Each structure stands twice: as C-alpha cells, then as structure tokens.
Image 1 (tube, rainbow, N blue to C red):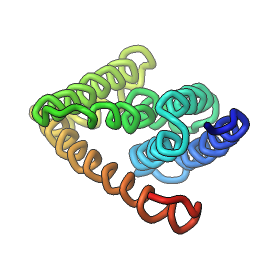
Image 2: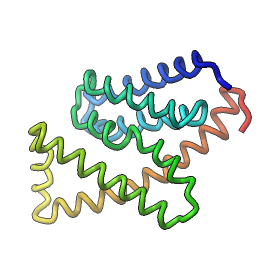
Image 3: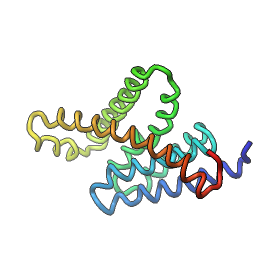
Length: 180
C-alpha cells in the first residue's frame, strides 16, 4: 500500500507537468489539439502507479486549473471534455471482454464528448469562428470534419495503447527500476 504522501506528490507533479503542457497552447496553433492529448496521457502514469481514482482526482485538479491558466480556451475545453479523462475511461473499457462493445463505447464516448465540447464552445462561449472555419470546406465541411475526427480518434486510441505499453515495459523498468 502506497503512502498518501506519495500519491499526493505524484498527482501534484503530474498535474504540474500537464498544466505546463497546456500552457504551451499559446505558442503555436497546432498545439490546440496536440497539447491536450499529451497532457491527458499523463493519466496513464497515475493509473499504473496509484489507481484509477487518483488519476481521476488529478484530472479534476488539472481541469479546474486549466480553465484559469490555459491561453487557448478551445484547448482547455478539449482537455476537459475529452483528452483529460479519456485515458482513464479507456482503461476501464479495455477490461471488457466483448470487443465490439468496447469499440462502440469508445466511439460513443468520443462523439458525445466532442459534440458536447464544440456545442458549448460555439453556443455558450460565443466562439463561432471555430464553426465558421468548417464552412470553408463547403456544404459537406462538417461531415468531412466528423469523419476525419473519428479516424484521428482511432489512431489516437491505438497510440494510447503504445504509450501505456512503453511506459510499463520500458520507462518503469529503466528509469523507475520497477518490474513489469
């Protein structure tokens, strides 16, 4: 059983790194999507080293602070509504035996989260320029974006598998001196 001080310290360090990553969203436009992905991946470390519950607490802390310090609001919402918690949810979904149900739930989580995120960004926060950029692709712009987003999600989901394997089999053994 790990001490509470270890759990709090690890959560604090991972939260600080996630916030530092999110803070970089003001440096370049492509970081709007990349930074929340990488910040969310830190949840893998918390799940492996402590638990899903502590990973969730760390996500909540980062999500709250993200709103306050992230210069790119769209990136903050992408972290809050999907990338921050998806690695945790994915870990739980992966425990299911039925592969078809697993993929259905993953895509359902992604699509509901994405629609909710962009609905709030556009309607509640008045960032209509996000939606207007899709109109430049013509009348099928939204459909093209949705298909591309789902394909990108598939790649991201597989990438998370690779990150988790690399963390457990390589990083933990080489740098933390812990067994697989």
